[in-house]
Image 1: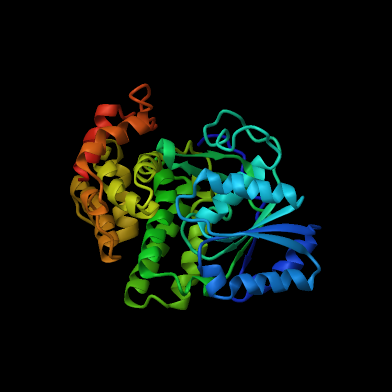
Image 2 (image 1 turned 45 degrees about the vertical axis):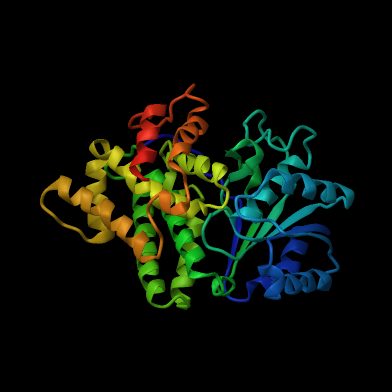
Amino acid sequence: MHSFNLKIQTELIFGNGRHTEVGSIIKRYGKKNVIILYGQNHAVRSGLLEAVTNALDAENIDYVLYGGITPNPEVFYVREAKAIAKEYAVDFILAIGGGSVIDVAKSLSVNFYYEGDALDFSKRIVTPKKALPLGVILTHASAGSEMSASCVISDSTNNFKQGFRNDLVRPLFAITNPELTYSVSMYQTAVGIVDTFMHSLERYFNKSDKIELADRFAEAIFVNLRECAETLIADPLDETARANLMLASTFSHNDVTSMGKKANLVVHTLEHALSALYPSIAHGHGLAVLYPAWLFVYFEELKEKLDRFARVVFNLHHEDIDTNAKEGILALKELFMRLGLTTTLSSLGVKREDIPTLADIVTENGTKELYHDQKNLTRYDIIKLYESCF
């Protein structure tokens, strides 16, 4: 087990109706002038935005609005929001939405005090030194961005989608009300379940000791996710499953499942290339296609851990370790399919002739390999992996 520091500053405020407390919560943190970021339609249409502004009005907190943020958020949202935030001299950012809105808020938080290009942090040219504080009202269980130190921003004009990690962008608070997820479509629920799975699966299959608490936390999340998925397939409005799914999303990506490990989310890197070139592809759907294929590429290195995963998560108990490990991968893929997701690149509209371009994005035109602590992947390896998914 590696040495580590774990700093999770986010106050988790969980429960039905808790979003109505946002005014008193922001006031408790001493903030008086807020920029509210939100997505395209849901916050307005559902009445959530009105409930939030009413709560701020009740506490005499000023605010300015910036909406219309889409999935796979583009850097121009950050630039536009920064101009508004500067004009109104805000002292706090409130994100209402899922991972995309939260990531724009995070990028804004560090760019507020930075005079260089808004993508410099995502390109890892500079490291954040100061950030405007932010809070979250979560509406979609998926990205885990509400308690993570991660932020991903796109620039589709350059086929760019990358992220950075810094504790400065962890929200001060995250209000997670399961009721706000009841209107999320089954497709968006499904891709959210996959994304939540991946945040801890990617950590789980990095090297670890045979007995490691982080892995046990991860296995609890996997079992919970499987049970939630199966319940929601039968009843998409099951309240208990929605509540547990929201908590799983938060704890899968807040670094608890990577304690003592050198976590590398390499399949996220492969998918970021995919949704950089094809912005309409949902991140979780891309992961559902790529991750089972990636596990087969690393089968020999991971089969003992895959055997354990199959036994703990899917209750598979073949005597032959190779058989059990393979059945575990197939059980995971089958779960994604039962959630209604396709599992090929062609089904997502990807063109076979674009596969070399995807590999170029991942490897910076073949100048680097994709690192993993079991083995690296070359450009050639990555092309073969993408082709296996076609």
